[in-house]
Length: 362
Ligand SMILES: [Zn+2]
Image (cartoon, rainbow, N blue to C red; front, top):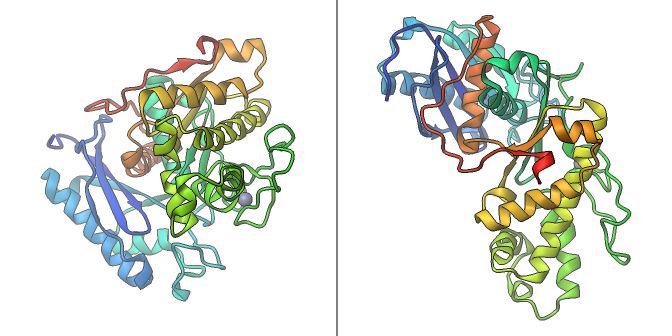
């Protein structure tokens, strides 16, 4: 644990069950090197959740021995859909199901409670900010990147010249709902995959845990009627086990992950033609696995990314670092950037064991 010698910003990452908090000092150093969590109470509605955020803020200051007067700004992220400045969607969402959340301006309300400027990002964008600044360091303001996180859904963030692309309604960078070509990805008799958003054949309908549960696993289990996973009580439970079967070289599980890697490669191809970034970051369950399976997954993704020779030479595919802390850390960096301080992030410890792989090296 470090003690702040300078003024600081605080990062608060709000999730469905917990908040994660961090402190970043004006020199670009994180004062905590691990998850600092408390319960988020989002299901109890906005007032309970605001209290929990204030409590997370106070706890992380106490933990790091930081004087509240040293805090100049706070970064906040939550799951979407939200507006670019932190107003929860009028339709609510999975995380914000309590009716009082609809249209709730979480950023302004936290600002009132803390009496400090609060800078908002959705969770995909906050993780993308962290990956970007951690990777590029001093060059961050000049570089472009894209981050894709394969979890229950497919989260993402697009950064161009150091700036998060937010869009007019805050919906830019929602790469999970970008349509990708399905020809050659699906088997001849495989139904078109459906996404929770109502689209068919978008990236999330294949490359997410929901996509496995709803689309890929039901199809592949029919192809493998004797597979153990046919005996599970629910497809939701079975979907969570696919990765561990793939680690054991199970052919059905590998077919499922192969379709996900192809989908991600096709998504990266679209991005390559859209913002042509220097770095493609990939994170989430699909790459939190054995070194061997991770390498196979990244290589398969790469093989299905159609880059021009110049792009291949200049760009890198690597992992989102420290994913569990990326939201809080990215939020803190966004708060520091908002104060127009040049940010150089010096990592306390490098948790990831992956070395970046140039596209040209794969
Ligand atoms: Zn979708």
